[in-house]
Image 1 (cartoon, helix red, strand yellow):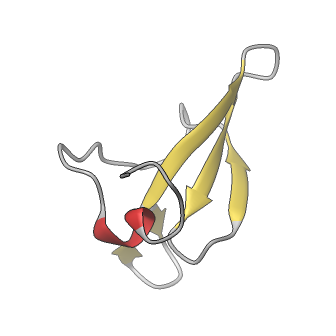
Image 2 (cartoon, helix red, strand yellow):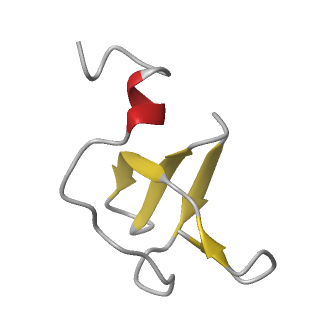
Length: 61
């Protein structure tokens, strides 16, 4: 996800999607969650799993 304030991209993983609101819940690399409408956000899909996320969950096990 792009931070206009910091002018850099931060990592995150989509953990949930609400089909009614069309919003995604993102687990950010700082361990916080954020609910976003990704249709209006600047984001980039990465091909590989992020190293930081493997440390926060059992997803990489």
